[in-house]
Amino acid sequence: MVTSIPSISLLLGAFFVAAIVIAFVKKVNIGVLGLAFAVLLGLLTDLKWKDLPGAFPTTVVLTIFSVTLFFGFFAENGTIQYLANKFLWKFRNTPKLIPFAFYLLGILLAALGGCDMVVFTAAVAFPVGKSIGMKGQHVGVCAMLGSMAGSFLPWSLHGSTAKAIIETMNDGKWAHVANTISWGTFFSAFAIYLVIILIYYFVFKGHKLSGQAEMEEPAAATPIQKKSLVIILGAFFLIVVVPVLTKMIGGSFLTTINRFSSVAPVCIVGAVVNMLMNIGDDKAVLKKRIPWNTLAMLWGMGILLGLGATLGVNKYLGELAEHIPTGMVLVSFLLIAGGLSLFSSSLSVVYPLLLPIAGVVAPNLGLNPVAIMAAIIIGSATTAMSPLSTAGGLLLSSCPDEVYDNSMMFNNMFIMAVITMALLAVAGAVGMIGLWGTLHL
Image: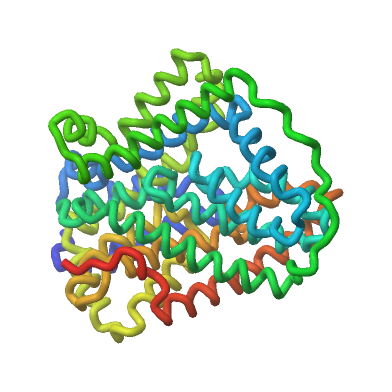
């Protein structure tokens, strides 16, 4: 049996790399591979089978399921498309503002389900951008950065997943500050991406855009879409407003409601409301809108990497990471997260691997944990604009060849991903990441 922590760490690392390589080469689900390697690791370290499922919290998987189920109804019944068209219609006569409109639209739609909502942003952004003379990669980067920023909100896919992992890691040590880290990540990303958008705005001569955007006036919202908007506002009130009111006013009623005002329970109840009110076809939502492949990846790799905490590997790796020069810790985590995300999933690989290690390193070195964890979350998601990633692929799939040449777009978006990652590293080096939400434990 393998008993020494360094040996177990090497073994876990070998299984981790093997899972990524096999999944990348053979195009199979990395989660199934991860679960198989977790079984093998358990055998070699004398764990019992019952120790494996508990290595990764079910709340993380439940969060993704509930968020995508709830918001899937609105994608299915056309509410998301209605909001996209209605929003951009307001900017049709101000071409110089349209690049920023794409960024804000990406945030709005990603707030309603996650980064995958970029397909809806791109579907309306590419034709509109073409009509006013924007470069295809300029449209793509605005839509993509907006979608990523919106996905970091505490109730959206990336934000809620990272928050759920942070709440449960290191025996719940971070649970009381997970919300602060989540909001800090969003505001940091919003500001940094906006600066990057401004840089690209002048590089691509957005200030010289002219003419009127070619688009049809959106049709009025259907009764179903109007109901959907009310339900979305109700969920937003419960998730965002109720916690604030509880802190400001208090009282037993608000305190009781606040205990269930987190993302997963609100979205689960909201999904049932959607079903009962016939907001959308629940069978179609379950089949098309739930990312079953991602859930399988997250579950399997989460268990494999979760064994790192069970076996003491996370603490050991955290101690090793303390030898990185303090000034380089944040940028190192950011670049490692971005590099891993090129070949694997942020949700299923990068977050479960690096966030717990950061939870050890940050307090031991006296660093701001909001900044370190935000660097991991933002860094891993930023490379998602690469066409090799899921989100980047979705972006290109929404760009018709007759609008922008897809082969050129593939190359250009890959280059944009590399440049944006370099700009993000600079932002991290000058202290922009984690500026919102400073805390020390």
